[in-house]
Figure 1 (tube, one colour):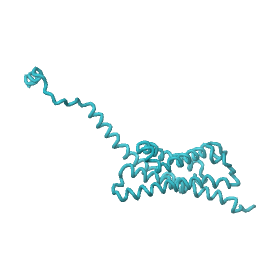
Figure 2 (cartoon, one colour):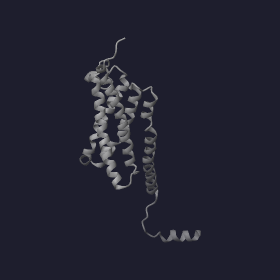
Figure 3 (cartoon, rainbow, N blue to C red):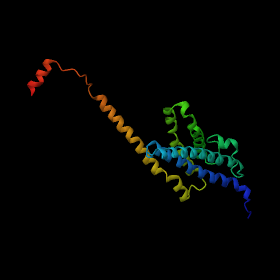
Figure 4 (cartoon, one colour):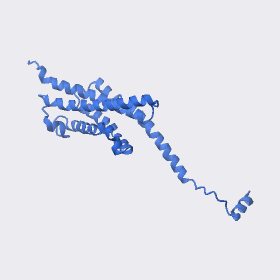
Length: 211
């Protein structure tokens, strides 16, 4: 029985560890971003610290994603090549789930540095674009559970699925005020306009007669 050479598995271990770290960072980034969007963090000092932490977590997640993919180039068993780690669904190993992971990586690389483009593209466009970070988390979770080496293990499933409950809860809190405000606007639109003019004399007399 041959012993496995450490150099033959070191890159796989690096990719495996960095992938888990990337998922944790993405989950933390999404949770913190949703908490800031729902105004759960009201104190100005906490908002400033949270904004900086949110930015650093996003950049760290991108770095972990890049390391997760690049480390696979040294894997002697998988041998993905540049095509396998850059083109979605081109890798022979679980192509559907690895392709989803590559798409999630591209979205993360696109949305992460959007902090620095907020003033140029405008706040509304930036917020609309930034909402896709939840999609990055969903795709990353699907990729981890579908293509991860430790996907059958309970601990990895717990790491991947634990953020689902708070993410869904905060999303509901964020969408609820919008629905109520839209309903209030519809009611306001249906009300007859107040002109401030007195009704005609015949209308006033008819109203008095009914009384």
